[in-house]
Amino acid sequence: MRNMFNAAATMGQMQQRMDLTSNNLSNINNHGYKAREGQFSSLLYQQHDNILDYDQGSPRLTPDGIRVGAGARLSNTNMNMTAGTIEPSDRPLDVAIQDDFRFFVVNAPTEDGEVEERYTRAGNFYLSEQADGSMMLTTNAGYPVEGQDGPIILDGEFEDISINESGEIAVTRDGDTAVEATLQLIDIENTRVMEPVDANSFTINEEDLEVPVEELVAEVAPIDANLAPSALEGSNVNMSKEMTDLLEAQRAYQFNARSLSIGDQMMGLIGNMR
Image 1: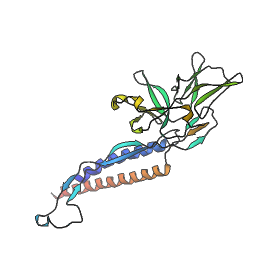
Image 2 (image 1 turned 180 degrees about the vertical axis):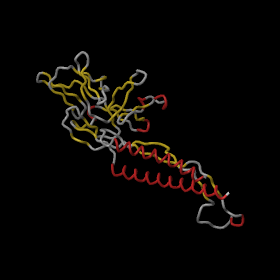
Image 3 (image 1 turned 30 degrees about the vertical axis):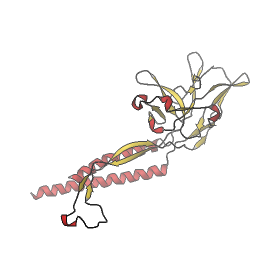
Image 4 (image 1 turned 180 degrees about the horizontal axis):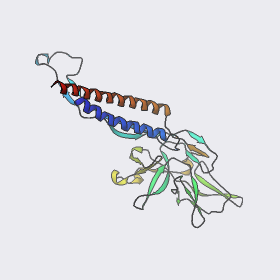
């Protein structure tokens, strides 16, 4: 009976691991996506001591007794925050971050109508026309991109636009080019404080951490931005590793399912012997 409980508990955790791996594989082409990695820990175990009284003082090469566990669980999920591959593109509004722990800042609406600050490494930006004819720089989801002086809003009449290595947005009007805005970049060294919101954006929950965001982030000066213009950062998902992990989880799931089936058969045999 204990083995059946252990197998059933482990099967549930293996399913979560397969879901995690499948999510990584489904986002392999999502710019700025960071792979999720699951960490497992043992559930409660019971110690069975089998040392006889006359054998207490004898030297041993093995531990006293045995431990009977109750399965494993997915204890936490970590994000692999290493930089992905830089992929050149032909769009002047594409820009890639080349340093680890660095993020763009965007403003996104919440369910209660408020606006929260989110962080992303996806630099595929777009221009969204506003009611007054001006153009706002947004993410592919339509969220405003934050600049050094707030959301980046430009006059609608221009001939050309580009983003350079420092995050400066250069706009050409009547043949003259000038910098009209600068992207806001921040560094977050302790990425464990970040919570994923969607595939490639994160937030920091001040209430849960009881620490102001200002103490967890550091603004990056434009001279230190180190961006790659007309390029995007690919996801850091390693397909070969994810496929290996998926096969390993499937094998473990099948093994525990077989163990559960054999345990059920044994219980049936015992019941028929009565």
